[in-house]
Image (cartoon, rainbow, N blue to C red; front, side, top):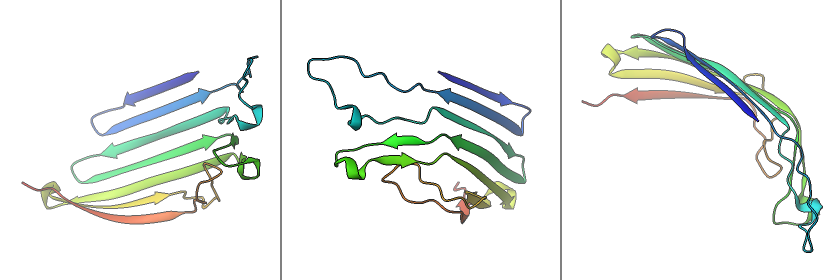
Length: 139
């Protein structure tokens, strides 16, 4: 089940939220069953919410993402299968437009709470990261 809402608050501000729920899969009887140990169990609950803001001079965004733990298996054998922990990730950005919007400088931050987040058992550990960005609007 998925629920989602996107709302334009005004010309400068938009907001969104979504939630998804997925039950654990049921292994059906079959003469050639897929091994239950090979099934991936995605997160049961996921939630995202955030907003974006943009006016002629400033822009920015913020979001929060939550995911339950999940069980991942892949083409490798069971020693490489495993659970990922539930996590909450907070992200944000802030920028300024210069020269009538021809140049934009932006700072993006991911995982502001600096949690150790692994979204997939084979994935990298995500820690806080901050990136600077400069955009040029060409004629």
